[in-house]
Amino acid sequence: MLLASLCRVLMGGTDSMGLASILIGIEREMRQLGIWESTQPDRIALSSEMPFCYDTLSFNQWMQFVLIVRFRTIIDNRAGLPSTCNILPYAAEALGDVKEDTSQLLDLIKDLDGCFGNN
Image (tube, rainbow, N blue to C red; front, side, top):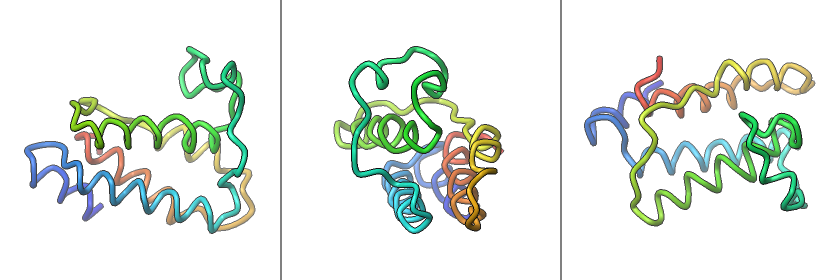
C-alpha cells in the first residue's frame, strides 16, 4: 500500500514510475508462481470486448497480455492513464485456485488499484 500512497502523492493521483514499478512486481510474482505464460493467445482471444476478456482468456492471461501490455504502452507513450482501476476483487476470486501463496501478488494488485484512487 506504500507504493499506492507514493503514486498519489507524486503526481496528484497517478505516477508513471510508481505504476511501472508495480507492473514489474506483478510480472515477477506471476513468474515465481508459475502463472506467467510463454505463448501469447491468438488475436481473436485478445480482441474480446468482455470485461477482463473473461470469455476468451484466463485471468492470468488477461493480466499478462492485456492489462500489463496496455499500461506499459500508455507509460511509454506518456499518454493519459485511466482515472480508476478496480482489479482486486476479480483477482482474489480468479487466483483462488492457485495452490501457491498469492498474497504478495494480491498486495501488488491492490497497490495497482490504489494508484488510481481505489482503496
